[in-house]
Image 1 (cartoon, helix red, strand yellow):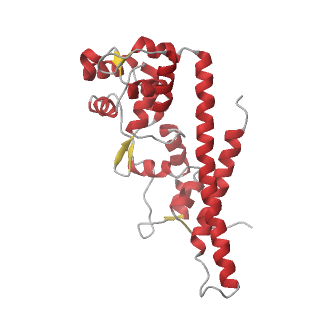
Image 2: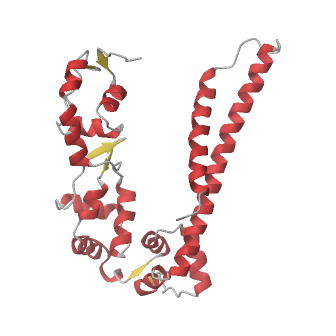
Image 3: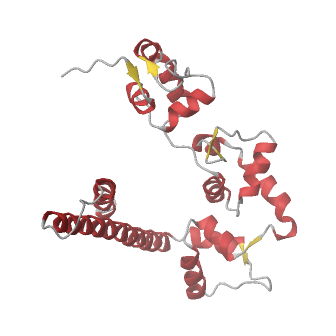
Length: 259
């Protein structure tokens, strides 16, 4: 049945324009999309129809990838420049005008991944070198893990197994870290390890959701049998079922063989 809307809430507004949840917010912040014209909260059908081209402009300008915060931005750049980029380096790049803050999330600035990927690498290196000074050619264990994109405990294990030598400050040379990154066999081993760890974490989330559902069923049965005075709140069940559906879809993807 065709549903004719006279007004649209935020989610319906985004869906009608073919946008994901973050894109309308950014479009509004940058003046590409108009604000709601009904009670300051909803958009009229006429205004929504006028926004179709503007919705395409939002996608063209900001892309489809969700913006990321400073920590993830630093990790993304670290892998590109083979240096331990930190959050403060991202802030310097913004202050220099090399990188734009596209929006904020919970009060923290966020950045477009394609803006990060377009950054001049020499500019990034200059910022990192200025911060590190004479320590530029070395990294601590945390910085090495950042460059490699590994969990810290994974790097500690590999460093011990490979006999990597740290200096008196507990820092490793960049050539040693680069040698690890260029080891294809090691890369496959670490990728498989990360997949197993991620899958284990996802399964723990699945088990928690299953426990919530089972507990709700028991409370519901107790009410039906007259052992409880009131039925259980359906809210936790709804949230658990949504989580269970999402996490099982994620598990299916994680268990699929790598191509």
